[in-house]
Image 1 (cartoon, rainbow, N blue to C red):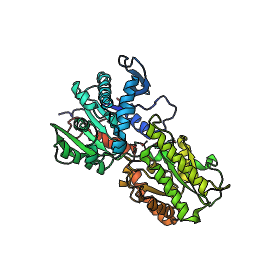
Image 2: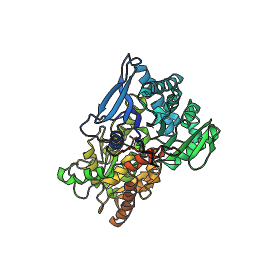
Image 3: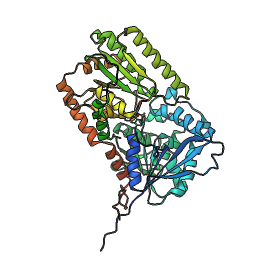
Image 4: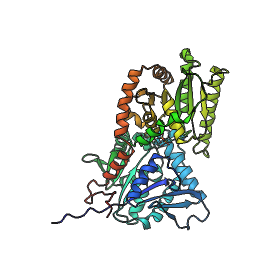
Length: 473
Ligand code: GDG
């Protein structure tokens, strides 16, 4: 009997915002990895355009074909953007998912708008979907999307990937509308997490709050639904970062010349309260206080591009960070040495990568983080024979994989200061040994491995094989 030919499956990615495929260069690794898979399967990327307009409720989606893939976006009304994006998603879910219930603001109107906008996403997406598609929904903005799509008769397989942590069940159970969210997550065929910690938290939440049951392997059941809750740690495009970093010598000086014995500690983070920036600065201050031998011989370069500036809590974190930078520079600096070099703006990716390569220490101190790609980029950019040292928060998802970094508790300022001293003085042999192991891990679990294993998980208990990359006829 002839074999049934494999049927090519089309990938449809959904996220709050879509990547800009008209840009000359894709700087985000995620856009490249998903873009390649989308192009290969002639797939589609769907999301919010980032624009608001008064007649958004009646306006049709904007659909473009860019390099063989379909990019579809909808606009939102101002009230929708406020309630869904700035409101429930970023004022309530983002802090709660990062264990900051103290910052999670409750507002029933905003949570209602969040669910309504998800329904609008489903209305606009449904006509673009075919039954054999694989629909990949990203992040906390779109938790109810599968439920909305199923309610409209969608039979395609739908997976959800959470880029943030999933907090402990006691925290998630305190989120307004949590049961609606929990039940909505159970509707997905697959729910992907960054770490085993997050997956186990979700499982415990489903058991405790949704009366769920653990089935074989990673399968769980609750409320008449069964889903696969599994771990897919996101990675980076290791070769891309390494290649950028290796061009460094050709490009001239990056930092003001400060002598051959000046060491650089680098931090790169959106200026978000989850990233532990005040704790990091205080630890650097304690380093200078307790280890005066580093005076004039080390500086901290902190790149902190702005993010979500419309929200007051982000203005507060900025003021706090800038006050600390001023204090440290005023207290310890002199006319020839500025201890903290701080930029409140983004820098091009090649500059960033060269800075990583040049820096003796990568300092990554989030109070909670889904993964933290900066930690992996820092490793990828190092010179293998003379690498720098990564000092990494235990509460970044990356710590589950990057065990040979110096792991710290970012709340413990003294411990972080001691770790900085250790990193700055670590012998080359130890740096090399640690780096070697870290490198192997980021190379094995890279961006493409993440993408392909998540897509493959859609096929579990499915009779149709996944074939996103069909051979040309
Ligand atoms: C979320 C989760 C999870 C930063 N500043 C500049 C710049 N960046 C790039 C970095 C890195 C990316 O942005 C940031 O990624 P992170 O993972 O560190 O953090 P989030 O933005 O919070 O991302 C996180 C991630 O989703 C993926 O799942 O790891 O836990 O919170 O690539 O290099 N890039 C350039 N200039 C900058 O100034 N070019």
